[in-house]
Image (cartoon, rainbow, N blue to C red; front, side, top):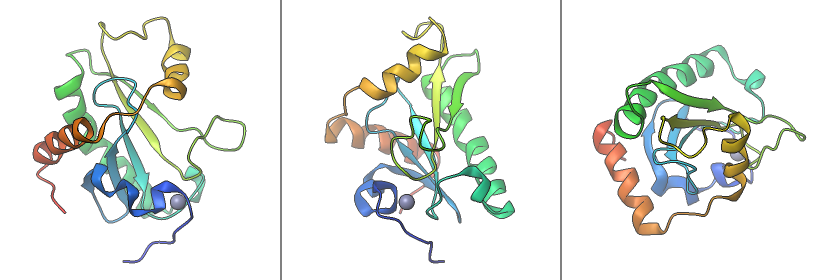
Length: 151
Ligand SMILES: [Zn+2]
């Protein structure tokens, strides 16, 4: 099925190496500049800016994808606390970086460096550095294997 495309990076082939799970309407990728190990994004395949633009089918698929991917991220990168941030910035004044809807899933645990409260992890999203290609590919491969997904 063809999806409407925009001119942003999430609509381009540049993200293909980072995809570790894909459904009819959603993809999951490793964030190229993760704030913690396992920081991932769930992204609609259709170009939309706002969660309110998603159809019922896309919303269900988004929910199912988050449900499928999050336990794997928590098992590999979180701890037994089941702690994670699930967040999306929507609209011009929200801090939305890429102008295409995306949900951050950020596994959290008591030893991470962001225990001062919500704000510190979101500040970090703006400032962390990108992974090198080799390390990125390694992390993607681990998640593809865990989710039995291949292109
Ligand atoms: Zn797009």
